Length: 358
Ligand SMILES: *[C@@H]1O[C@H](CO)[C@@H](O)[C@H](O)[C@H]1NC(C)=O
Ligand SMILES: *[C@@H]1O[C@H](CO)[C@@H](O)[C@H](O)[C@H]1NC(C)=O
Ligand SMILES: *[C@@H]1O[C@H](CO)[C@@H](O)[C@H](O)[C@H]1NC(C)=O
Ligand SMILES: *[C@@H]1O[C@H](CO)[C@@H](O)[C@H](O)[C@H]1NC(C)=O
Ligand SMILES: CC(=O)N[C@H]1CO[C@H](CO)[C@@H](O)[C@@H]1O
Image (cartoon, rainbow, N blue to C red; front, side, top):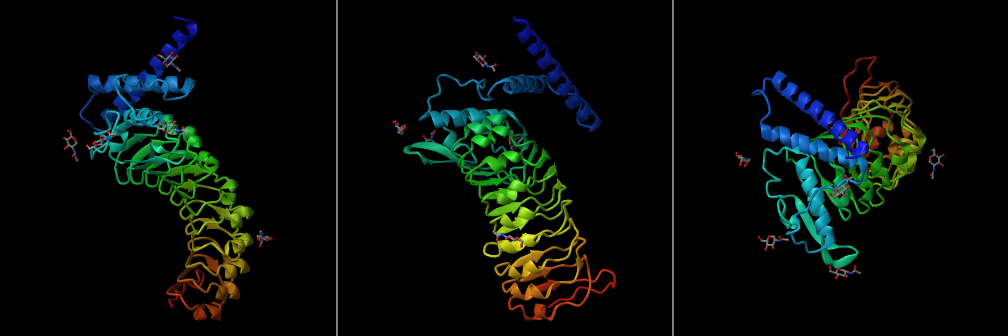
């Protein structure tokens, strides 16, 4: 054994040991029924060894593929590697959704959808994964980057934790990414900015924290949901460059101003929800340019000044919520003339006046 391999081995062992220890310790303090079975320990050890190797080279290299398995084409073989690696990274699957993830027929796995490859219609490839509401716990291994033809990846309402694999940058066809309502943490998953076909980004209800890169708003996305995380940043001036029809940023810790550039979204913006952040500014005149908007909610912020008369331009608005801010002055009469308005909530915090409803 070379000394490099030797030290690698020791590192792996220590890593595996410490993780096993934490695992045992937490299950003991959680009042679980004591220690892990030998099977569980060897599983964790195995996974940690695999994981450590993966850090050194491209992951997936060392998921062994039984040579007796036959695959229709190399894409499906890669998909097999990705899905087996993922299955190993799953700790709990109470609905047994991945129990049938065995053998070479990956297109028959629960939650996995195949379609002819866009660049070769005579080859089947994995085009979608949908494990919504699976309640599965685990993490996403880098091997998922082998699913290079994936267009849809839906994981909402599971218990996946950790981060979004960097190898997701290989998913050049990914169109919809829904990781909502999981336990992902760490900084904003910058890898999503590198996905040329991405239109739908949903990472709401996770534990992401830190800033949101301003490049997000220059990207050609149709829907962005990043609400209910721990993001903290100032809304940048390029916000208005975003061509989204729906954007939901609520329940984070954004501050700064509602930028005037929002007016540039007039042809595309349909719903915007920024409730419960720390926005501090006046409501810009330019909101009146948002003629396609149906839902506009900036409630529970620290917006000041008057609601501008220009709101009369929001001719399609059905729900307009500006309550729980520091807005003052009279409500512009033009609000009453908005043809589609169903629900208008405005509250003068200082006067303690109840919301006005139309
Ligand atoms: C999943 O499989 C386990 C073991 O075979 C079984 O005990 C359990 O009832 C199954 N759960 C569901 C929801 O089918
Ligand atoms: C998927 O299942 C069907 C029906 O059980 C079977 O005919 C087919 O060969 C399977 N496909 C693969 C790729 O294993
Ligand atoms: C398309 O797929 C078929 C079946 O796997 C293969 O024989 C053919 O060489 C592929 N064509 C190209 C251009 O890769
Ligand atoms: C976007 O909005 C800003 C501020 O209102 C304005 O100065 C700028 O010219 C607009 N850009 C485009 C491309 O419309
Ligand atoms: C990174 C790594 O450990 N790669 C290994 C994967 O498995 C092959 C075959 O056993 C080895 O040759 C590689 O070194």
